[in-house]
Image 1 (cartoon, helix red, strand yellow):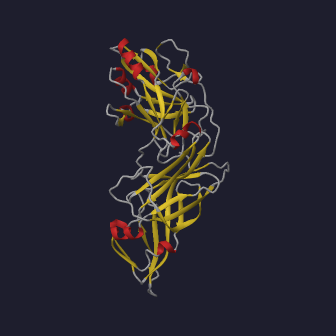
Image 2: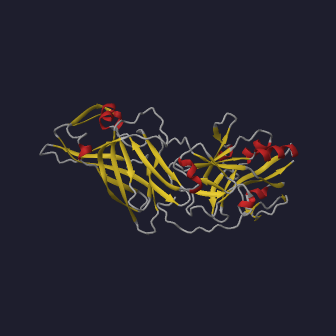
Image 3: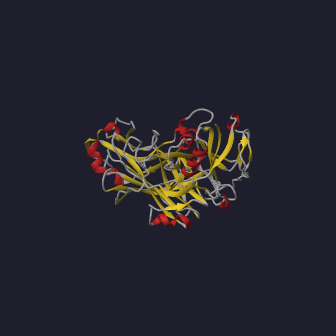
Length: 427
């Protein structure tokens, strides 16, 4: 992933299909050399039904990265990520800064993995406006937090200002915390981590929108993500500068809250997250506790199995053509989960197949679509097992603002380029 993206034009080229097989009648696409050409058999196409659904249970606690800031476009609307973090002591032990400890400063630093700006400027740096406020209660170590969770602040500000972050391979944002934070450290003694956490509570961090939507991916597992307190002892002969690091990294409780305000076709989710949007024309995939796609091939699979009960699927791929109304910057990858009979979700087996015909799931700039190889998954569907649905998600939906629109399921509404499964079989 690049360190930052600007809006760029991306060309979407012609659709492609299989080459070395006995082609069943179809007027979709052209031939392409592909791993599927290694198989001799009959090519066929499966069409299904699909819906855009709300991502209503996105776990955001315990992640190794977090997304701060906002993103806005005319298709999806406005999304913001806010980070809540517990500040705790090193090694969960006590800490003491007595009257002989002269504290100079406390610096909050974040390792920044990526910055996303919707500005057209090509600067070699970004000015990021952070605000850090104290929570009214500490985060709980044994609790799971989701994208809809929120903790209140008490109005005490630890930092509010602009930080310049230069483009580099190791970007760090540094914030000098004010006296409100130092008051919890100076001339203070804490017997253990729990006592300190109950005193400091925790912090809420926002990346403020000053007119240009910006967001940043924070690496919580990096050693540079911490609060460093710089001090020395009040002794004329002691000139050693010392540092004590408070923990805010992956090992401390933290979670992201995502707020979305949708526009257009998605605005139904502003008031009814249990709703679904018909996917005949468009299907919407967005991160930050946003939208997923549920697709089902049950009707096709039942008919295919009745006509070809002994069919063996050699190769199958789910094709997701990117729509012409999609934002130009593309998400990294689409992942897939399958529904079970009781409505729970489990992994699609092909995602962990390391052979040449493994899952893939990435965008192909030359073809204009995402390709998900799902041979094993599709084989089970057409063998007579009911298809309870496949859920498509963005694999970086907790850490990147990238979103996209793909064509729906109706060929007539999608320029004869719908979402579908192309497969090779023999019997």
